[in-house]
Length: 281
Length: 323
Image (cartoon, rainbow over all chains, first blue to last red; front, side, top):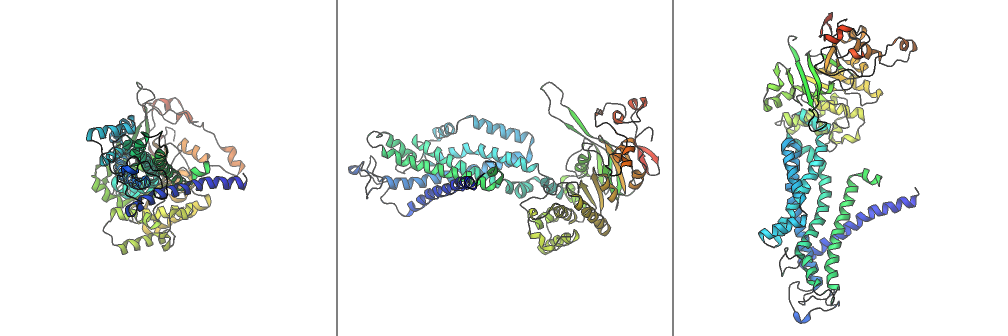
């Protein structure tokens, strides 16, 4: 292989990772800045100024209520990230705990937990979320809960798979011979050794959570008006798709940037944690 | 068994139930250990040899109470390990530790060496002060010929032989009476094997530790142990003082094992008799000698009557009708 090919391959590998960091950083920074400054109020309605085109005053124009779209995108980023962070943290906590338990105890506990996660997997994620919001009503909190619940089996399963591989290692036997119990081995040996897998999975689930939140908001089951969210902006723009198509593009691109960025970040992290995967590519 | 033995193993058996081949078939059962008895006196070295699959590692795990036997008992310092509660067993663990075969797999890559070595101490003596812990880690490192500041490095910074020294240091830190060494040098370069074995002998001299050494390598066992037991298909077929067994093997399987050691000298090679690779029955219901299918001396009697392990010569036991 020539050096040129190698460096191109390297560019794509680390380039993707860099792009992932940049896009994720952009979304995060936008959300952060929105706490201190937005060009206009994201919720102030001015019907007289509806559907303004792009201008120096309204960078992305205004929507059907005359709200500044750029400000709404900024505040919407906050919403997406908040939902993603809370939902993924909750599901990582519970899913990992269940996966570690299944792996440490094996036997019927493992069977039961894994069959339950099979059951949860049998329903498409968004369907589960719709069911939950249908039961408890729409709203940001319930959207978070719904997304967290369908993510729990994902983490339970990933954790169990990775943890089982660690439990088969000889240093676990050594720890048992040293007199450590199952809980202690799980905390001291198993968890640190599967952390990289969990971080990668959490990044990817974060992207999926943002997508799911947008989907739920699109269906009217996420954050409620007047609080802006990308998914609902998309739905509102849909009604005027032929008159002002660009209104659908802004939230759509925002969602795409966030999801793409996190996916590239996740891929890059996986490569960074496992050099063997890189060589195989 | 022997008076005052440190470790007494009685009638130890372990069966593994394998997954069914299809739904209605009975689950196949593998008899990894078929009733093993031996005793190890304090301060001695007991070697166990046999080909792969003969149950050596199963035996090590049972002696370490990392697995439960199907039958039989393991008594250390006169106490049956499987009759103890989990707390009592924990407390007993300070008396017996293990060194595994693979020095790359038996050390957690995320633990610094100091923490690896202190692991039994942390688990068994949680009340040790920091200074005491530090001091004992250093002592253990020095004992195995490593430097005190190696404790701040990670295992991957060491070679195979050094890593095995780390594993030995970990076993040594609680000053156990018994160290079970399961193929302690077979993953190492030949040039390093002797160093590690000499270290083990040296530690025995200094600390009076008792070894149960498991190996498929006869040279290793001959170098280190006082007494050896030869295992075949989950049973001991010959046992006796190492030098005596090597000089005058009484069981045809031991003879075959010794003959299988490659020799550079041509005249030695021609003398050797070959035994078939495998194909011996492993059916526990079989009444005969398990070795007869491979045995050059097999006769009709061997198919009907299983030879028991019996004293044959001074201190030497063999399970063969013709020994």
